[in-house]
Length: 222
Image 1 (cartoon, rainbow, N blue to C red):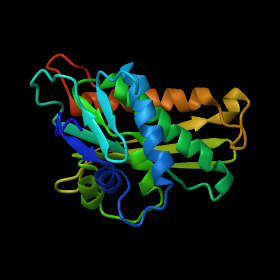
Image 2: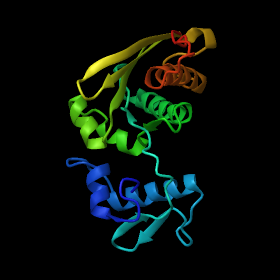
Image 3: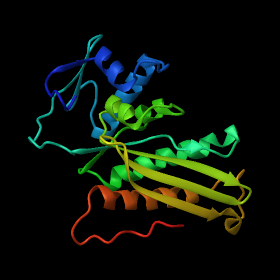
């Protein structure tokens, strides 16, 4: 909608952009929920819209006046971290870590890096597609991908930043945690572990994607 302010963006266009071919999803419920969350974030209402106007059975239109800025040139998609633990029951940890990363990156890079919404990136969970193809589908310039592996009381998380245009790895980091220090095992994940690792990754990527002359590279190893 921001690409075409004042113009109608049809529901069909949004479906093609947010849910590419081959994605199976309840489109009506998913789109309505996405617009509802967008309005909540903007403090907007459907009855008296200031930002997003609904055109029944047609689509939506962004009606607020823009300041003329070009917006963030860097657009990042955080792909769902792959669970390598061999236990499907632990998928919720990798999915929650992905969600926490999106939230923290949105804060750390606000206004300078566009972080693509979770419901868009999650459509590529488990997909075997090239970075360039995913980036084109979501109009992203960079991708963050990673893995989660747990063996007994040892947790290892890897994270990699990819530049989509030439599929080059720009940054990577490894995070090791001894869960026994907190009385945990792989069957008892700690929210604090998720938050801590996500915070360190967000800090490192903020440095990589929008460094300032006086910035000092953050310590990321844990």
